[in-house]
Length: 263
Image 1 (cartoon, rainbow, N blue to C red):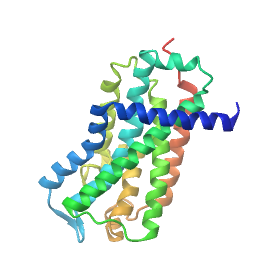
Image 2 (image 1 turned 30 degrees about the vertical axis):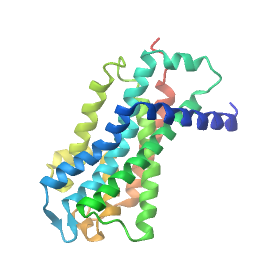
Image 3 (image 1 turned 90 degrees about the horizontal axis):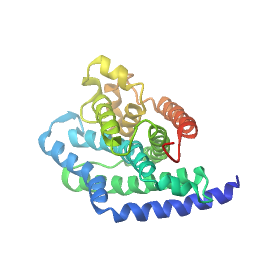
Image 4 (image 1 turned 90 degrees about the vertical axis):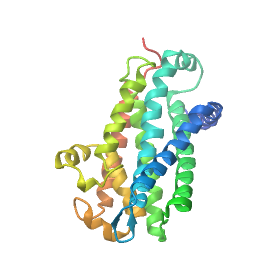
């Protein structure tokens, strides 16, 4: 396989994926607006202060950004790919010179572009309407950058790998959505993680969303809040290692289980 050629085709495929997504107005509005709607609901209902300088809205924004990576990467791809497979889209693509690597690159570009827009809108609404404070140190912004990069890559790879699980495109949403919702509740997106039962914390620690959420808290919450984490610190090195391991798992199973058609 010619790597430069595969990359070039992947970039072109990514542009096409973005155009196709933009034409689906209902999907675009829901994907971009849903996190903002949740912020409006939870931010209006829960106005408590969790710690000095930490409102619930501040805590919730960090969780929603992490959750957004899972929604736009894992959930979206694990639902769309089975649908494309069932409708014959992938089978037609197989008849073109495009290698599977280029297809993966195209999906990754769609995930990253969607996520960047979603994060920008979420932060803007949080700052304007709910008093969310943005990081002021370059270290926190650098942490935010590598969390976005690794988190997006892991979510994309895992979404492509999990796309082999649904038996049909029509049933994909029923299989994938409950998994994401349960992980959101277990991983401290909607509630303070250490307030959850110990068994929930242990289960959540197996999966990447818990660590991605914790990493985002290190970016948007003051360092003093780290004392309320399970280990009493942000554990950034451990977060990076675990996310990279899940990225490797996703890439391995993506390559092993991806099918152009159901046959």
